[in-house]
View 1: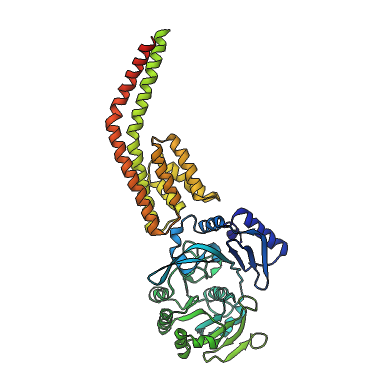
View 2: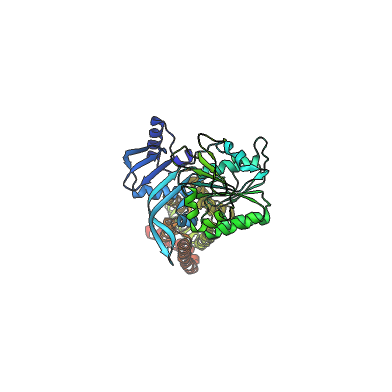
Length: 307
Length: 170
């Protein structure tokens, strides 16, 4: 949290800190909009700090702090619409968009910030691990809507596949961390808590990163976040045919919904993923509501079942 | 007593003239140093995507005094202070100029440049650096000309004007 406070104007940081402290909750998002009160989400509740409003000047200040006074470094990030900062927190931005040749070139005049706080939860994937292992780790897809804890779960999976747990062996794990969220690397070095046998390609485009790993790092498991494009799917097929296990996440609410998505349906039809973990944003972040096999049949469910 | 006074007047004028000629001779060197610094800055920003703070630190390592001191303190302050880059830049420029053999116009160029620092995307940033370099280049040429024209004369001119004033007063 200190990292986030250091980005905000002093007074605002103090107010938010005091508010969170006096109401004692764990924030998931802090949303700042120009000329609007500050919104803090805790997952279940919305809190407002009404006596403070973000001015244009302050928005500029925050952007400068995020980029360390070097906006030219954020070109790619401004095109993608989010910035990952130290500690793996992600700041989404919106504003007026500059378009060039029909594609987004940058976001200018930023009007809202969405600071998504990454609360590290160690051990949430433990209970599902035995379901994902059968002589080797199985290809796993994590399905969940925004804010359901997909990244948190993947982060935890990466930790356990790379350092092992009980009778499960530690395997060489490659993480293609396009948004720098899974390992929260700083200058390319993953955080201490990331696991033993972990190799990270930080800020690397997913499809290229996967291929680079297969060629150069001989991984046993590759972990990527938020797949979705045709290129990603191509790369996944390549990886699987190379005998490497893939674990990835995707936006969506259910197995049926994923099946309908044109790019992903081929993966589902080919029964690439032997295990699918479905998350929901109504539960705690990272809590799996059901585990499916490659045909979409339930193996386990929250509340009852194996785990 | 009179003669001592006259001597003092002459000496003062002479040294003023010498100082002026020294400043004229130093200005082209200082401007060239600034130009080099901006070229390094461009390389740091455009090709290695360093933050302004890191770029300043690297420039301080590569360039000679007194400019290295300037960039070092900008970099240090960026690291520890929670203020705007431009405020730091402006203050440091003001402080640097009290000691430098540079003119007010040169200062204005550097200050204006500071306003654009880190506020744009790569292409725009590169253009602004180029613009500042072009301005400095012009000033550099001008300063060399000034030095050639007045550099040698000003020392003797100081002495002569001192003698002139002393004669008037005697």
